[in-house]
Length: 178
Image 1 (cartoon, one colour):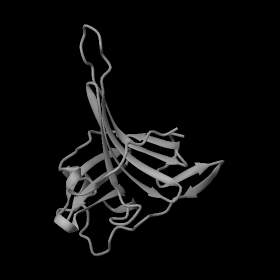
Image 2 (tube, one colour):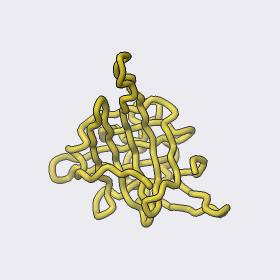
Image 3 (cartoon, helix red, strand yellow):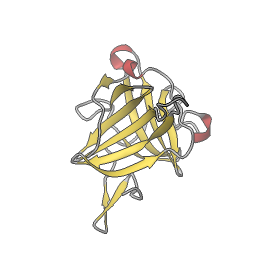
Image 4 (tube, one colour):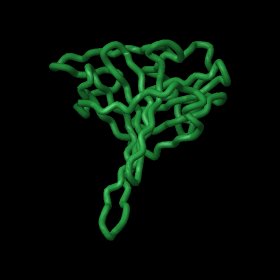
């Protein structure tokens, strides 16, 4: 169901509102403009990942230091964050990495009830013959419900990735939807 909105899903003709897991903190400074390369991250956060998905942006932003380090997923526009992950707790954002022959994948994910949101960036080797490696780069966001894929949105612009996920997040496992 590629046409489903990430904030609301059409299931059986009815719209299912997924709602915000955690609203953007009221006391936080406003996100920088989407054109600034920081996506929905504030000036005091490190953009771990950010890309445009149509008119919206998906960003993973790291903040704090040492024992107070955290990261948060945000989806929406600079004017309105539609969905964000909790900064702490059992459903907080985690990251995972996998190495592939000639490539690899990085994921950031969190759960919201029966739904799991997964931001991904992968490089896949496609050429194994005399022509050499012809990598394919894929970045985007997919959503699963009960392990089944319900939405997969690709980044429509270049993604940016900075920072070190390990400094802000606990490691999890790569998620492959059914």
